[in-house]
Image (cartoon, rainbow, N blue to C red; front, side, top):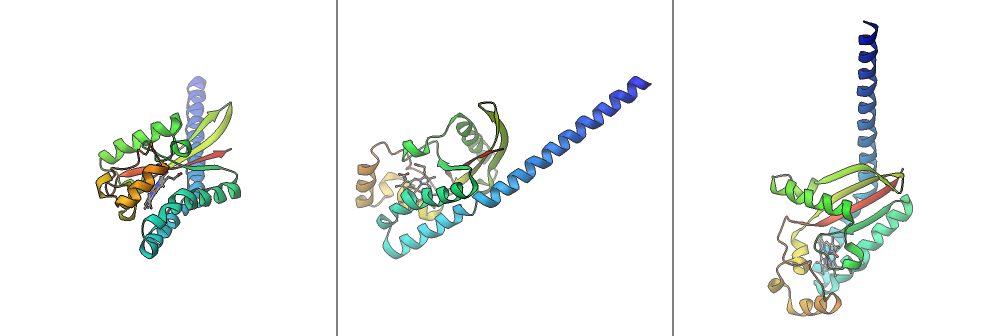
Length: 192
Ligand code: HEC
């Protein structure tokens, strides 16, 4: 009987530790979202305004400089790592995913194929890096209408723009997208 009580107590303790860990993860995810996600609609808004006012050619710096800058500002403020990654990069130097990110991006593609909404695809997980716990969070970046002028089917890209992109990015893989697909993801690395 005593033994049974002990087993029972051990089970309760394990269950409540699991519940606490799940709560911690939810809190971490909520806080990470709050700090990182507002950057995404800001970039889209800036992109829409710039394309409407000055044309797509003039909007190259929004994706090339503004988006990384806004992420860097937020990264400096929080002390976390923040960047954009993709399975098909335009700028491989900046946007090549590491193995954890590759796995999550592949998983996003499967989840999207199974009907999940691309706009809300995300994953958060505590992993160990060099023996230290790190919270990693990744959120899909969907292709909107304004993105197609530079990431859509090659033949649909304005010739002058196509030439310009080809000159700057000879290994560009970030074309051929259609509306609603996953362009890439925002990836956050948060030391714990
Ligand atoms: C005016 C052209 C243009 C438009 C429009 C555009 N992009 Fe880009 N995009 C670029 C360029 C140029 C790069 C490469 C940036 C660099 O050098 O780091 C890029 C890179 C990216 C990357 C980083 C990964 C990679 O492929 O290197 C993501 C993610 C991205 N774009 C998403 C979007 C989304 C989402 C939209 C629509 C809201 C969009 N882009 C609209 C030109 C554009």
